[in-house]
Image 1 (tube, rainbow, N blue to C red):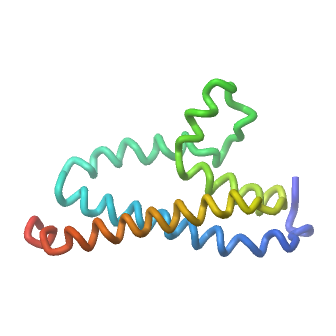
Image 2: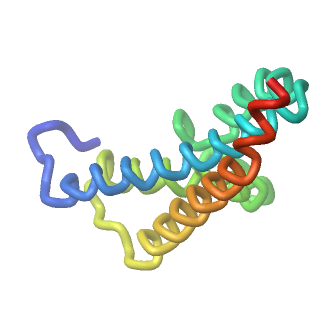
Image 3: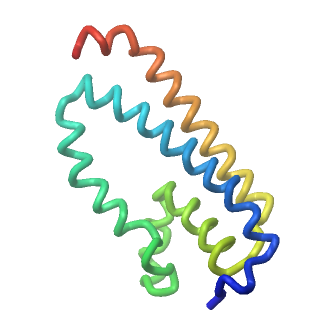
Length: 130
């Protein structure tokens, strides 16, 4: 298991990964903020889904610990890609493949763009509904 003594050049990609994750979360937050104003029950759904999402994301467990027939279902969680990248860079000190970084970039930018579009589209109406 790597320690702080062997932090290598691979760790330098962490700020980029963190920025991509923040963009993804920001986009989701914008969409959910509008949905929460339109549908008041979104808050209660999130109270249930966020803890479930935590346990379905490989933060405290690895895919090797899960039965093989369940892994494809767990990989449908988009947050999985980010935390696998964080572990790969910070824990295992392995560089990301260009495809991994490209996927994270597309998902992050796409989610943020959709979130900004939804938020801006409903911005005037949301103030009336509040």
